Image 1: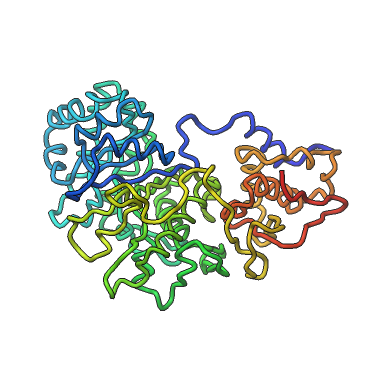
Image 2 (image 1 turned 180 degrees about the horizontal axis):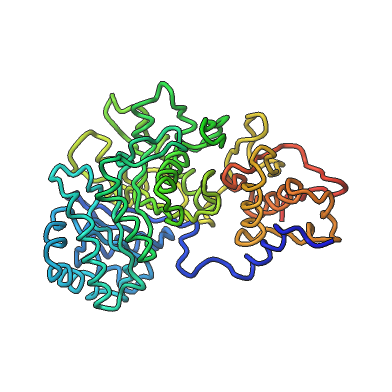
Length: 459
């Protein structure tokens, strides 16, 4: 009998691996500098390296920062500010000069990998939206002229307010007035240049405004029974995933399923005004700590289980000169003296197992005996995609479920997926988020048994 197609696909993925430019499971940080008490750029680079942070995003092209990052092997995303969009759009010579002076002069010693053209342009009160697409095209052409276009991507961060509908996620759609003049040409540009859509996603804002209907545990990646999308039947265990899938759904509605997302900003404030519900050190540590675990454990979203997720946490430091409510000055992971506001990991080596949702919604610690199994409600297509990932890129030991091996029978998709998911889960030290697979798996506290095959508890 021939091996099931999902085993053949899994083997193929082991050989092919991820694309060279893949972002899979990547954590970066936003380095804002609207403050009067921050350490020098040289010290900041030392801090980034000491924490294992390999990606950073800045909001300008300050020479002291770009010079300090030279030779650090830290990849950087720079920003062309909103107030330069008009000049970049109207004058190709300006874009050429800007790229030459602010990018080419430092690259490749400073590993600039992307240019964010503007930031949340659609909510900019200066009404610079009409300049965005021409500016992006001129900046890209400047990169082409300097032969840098193959290594440096061009995109523009959007806020979730660019969506007309975000709930349920399956109904995600961009604002109609932005589709034809902005999103259609932008997404076409991203496709043509092999780039991605930059998205700023803040579950904090949604929770703060709707704390009466949104569970705090759901917003913080903590144990919760999940929320079922009434449109597609998928179950979500985090508001973050639901927000991303609303964007993915909006992309699908315009037939741009091939465009990936990079989350250029997300975070949670450690302090806020009395009216800012949920802003606290405890909640900020929970959100950002669980976010790191979620991203580094791999896997996409319920709607896009194979999507590579890269996330930039906002922000590196508390910034004391920012305007607005108290929260705006308290998103930092670090105080200006470089001490952590709260202790969370930033790398796989620093991740410790945490509590994980289990069957029936019962809370169990992942430091005990727990196993990961496939959800029969996920559907064949989702299980297939998750199994391919686990046996291929995920590095699960799928040899026992090959034909004539010990765990091949019963020869069902759910049984084989369960074995592969558990292999991955145990190899990840049962870390929070490692039994997820886009909602295709869940944790149980009794050792599974399919036929004569018992599942291992660790490696």
